[in-house]
Image (cartoon, rainbow, N blue to C red; front, side, top):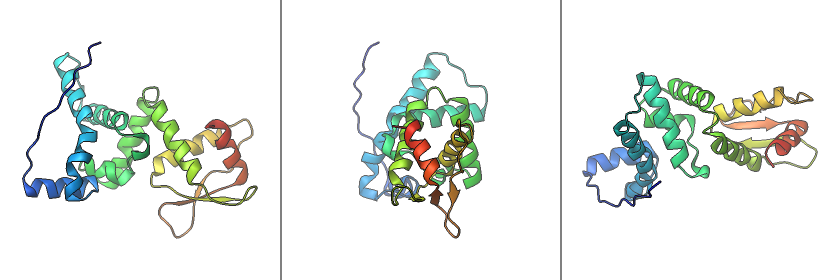
Length: 185
C-alpha cells in the first residue's frame, strides 16, 4: 500500500478561525494544529468515496466520520460526548447516541481506541488501596461500556456510579476497580 505524503496550506478567515476554535475547544492560535488532527479523517472519507464505497444514510455517514475521527485522534484526545455533539452540530443527547451507536457497530475497528479510553479512566481513579475510588471522566458512554463489562464479569461487580451532585465525577467500588485493572492491564 503506497504511503502518500500530503502537505498543504489552508486559508481561514478570522471568523472561521474563531468558530473552529470554539467548536474544537482550543485557542484561535491553536486552530491549525488542532484541525490538523482531523485532516486524515476527512481525507480518508474522500478516498473511500472515490474508491466507490457507498454510504447508505446520513447516520451511516456520521458513524463512518466519527470512526475516522476516533482513529485519527491520539488516544489521550478521546472526545467528550459534548465535543462530539459540537463537531457534528447535534444536541448533547444526539451526540451521545451517535457515539453509542458508533462504538457498538464498529467495536472491532475501535477496540484499541476504547481500550485506551478505559485505561485513561482507570488512571483517573484516585483513592486509597482497598477503598472506593473517585474519578473525573468526561465521557458517559465509556462509563456505560465499562459497566456492561463489570456486569458480565465472572463475579459481577458493583457498577461505576455518578457521584451525587456532579456531572463528570464517578465512584468506583474497590472490587470493580480491581476487575477493571485485570481487564485493562
